[in-house]
Image 1 (cartoon, one colour):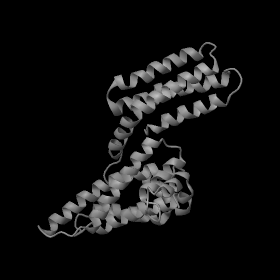
Image 2 (cartoon, rainbow, N blue to C red):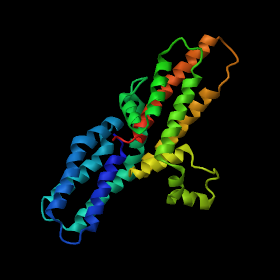
Image 3 (cartoon, rainbow, N blue to C red):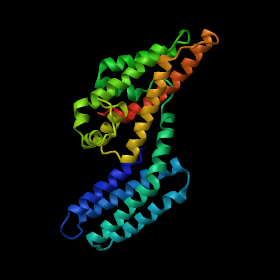
Image 4 (cartoon, rainbow, N blue to C red):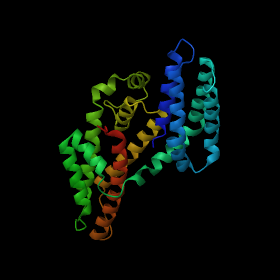
Length: 269
């Protein structure tokens, strides 16, 4: 579970509370209780499994218990906002970074080496040609008799590139405030958005947290660099069979990472 999902839930609650102008009402009480219930049933167990340290999670548990008791009485709107702010601040400052790192380091474990049915289905909905290319990469990886795996590596690289360009068109990325500011400040020199910037655009459009988005950008950059290296490598020593075996192992690992990224990028419907 992406840690930014919980942060999104907290921010939606805060936005609703801040827009209200009357006393704290029944519908808002239900909203608060639903967020606390989601924490207890979904988020807390998932985050504890990711971090393996209850002491890191406990302050959120304590704050949400305090919040639950508060809304069970007749709290003021300002009092509830202060408690929710405290939860948000603790999560953002103390948990978001370690959880995001744990999430992205473990996300490839969710997919077996080779074909990912969820990725294949989402690609078919986005672009049948990309889906066909993905299936070809999987077939090529399963072919242990190939002399080189650079062609399927190049195909996988192109799939990632095409997904990014379809979901983050150049003109749309260039219109975003953060991209224009980077251009004005001189922080970037490239004439068109990079893969990492397109990744940022896609995840930001889905209201992902900034830290999780930055981690995904770095993840995309790493996968791109490794794919490029595999595509461009020229071996000068050892047997051809050994080279092919090394290429196949690297492609198998990179397919797992690509699956993880595509699960984050591709729309679910």
